[in-house]
Length: 592
Image (cartoon, rainbow, N blue to C red; front, side):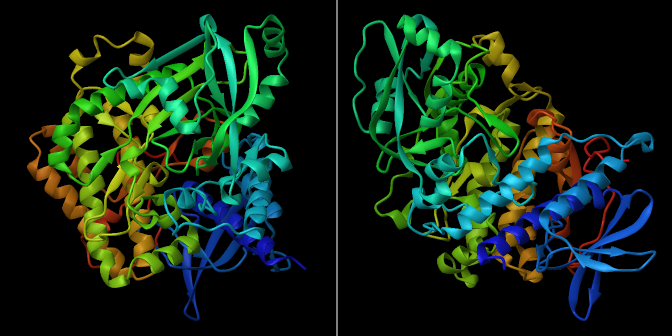
């Protein structure tokens, strides 16, 4: 008999797969529909496999305006011809069926081979989730780092949110934040000519060495002519296994100094680490695939992050007026080996987390994903922290603290951030006016046509190329991160199945956007936000298609999902229905 942890891991892994298939395949092709059976909602999915008439059926609850749902049963496969049988599926068979269906739907009717890694990633994610659920480690209410280590289920619209291919079983236990991972970083000493580093010049404490000493709680040993690089212990192991690294060791160009400093905590991204009480966190490199990407810090990405931080500091006075409860967590310094294709990455970025300090752990901000994107555990945490009567006030404060400055930065400054739930922290005390903290500058972009091009003249060409993004592409990704992956999920989690409350929260979000539009003097803002509010759909990143066809994350396809901002303005019954409309004609991608 399966354990409770195994049954939950099966159910939630299946929910991820079905959610992705419905969003990216079923809805665009009108092959997903809801039916009511004795007051129970059932989702039926039409499959196109070898020309046979088959359906997947699953009972669901809590339909949301964004098209989400909670599965209350494992999927069953119904044969609509022949013996008309219905049988339950496990995750492995569900994966095979859905991926085979996706492969059948390619242009010209030619079955396309999907990337074989995806099935492995799904199985790895399911196994990791069972491991986490068998050893619960939920400190989400305890403080900032407790919440970082309490994102149990992970991204709800990704087929393999907990996959960590590359870690050994022992390393999974040692380095997984959900299992309470705490460890010491290694120090690698590198001859200066082999390295590159940079820091913001406005503060002496922003030099990388000063940040690193604070982050690990110990001084760095001085070595003439060498630069010290804090390295994740997994990455240090990978380096020792690399022949080129061992050659540099033998020559003395690199020296592995071993573990150094105090223990740090693994945060929700797996590769970022933070010591309790430290002013700086370190975003390390990991040659491990977490969701879509190997988590390496490329030099040009880190240079971009620091450049964005400089611009954000210049914007800080206006931001305090626009949104006094918004704070950006600057990336302030980095160090790396110079690019060497044969090496695992050693780039490490220092982030200033000192604004998150509070008088008590309860007052520290918490990563929003652990509250609003973590299935039933997130709903339980919200119930403990936020009475239902206070949720509308909290949500309005959240919108003012996040949506308003994000729109200001996009349309008035020309800086695009990715404010999805993983990149946002929020306080849960003083719920009428929550404070919001935005992090992760290395994914920020300069919006062409809005950003002042004169400010780019002193930027390195490689960095400028990394930063520049066309207006429409930037807006699609921005809308997905802010409204689909964040605001809509927060509203759905706060409503917890209450359709009336969810529509009221959606109406509040639409009003905040409309208010910004009316105040803005930017004609592009008026035009684009009008379209945003009136469109039937919004763009959403297609994570299943991205992994199935091995797209680079920055080249991920987008699909259309229902627009809760528009729905929030209409007093209609919450009934999930397929839609084929797109946010713009070119923003959706539908499998043929």
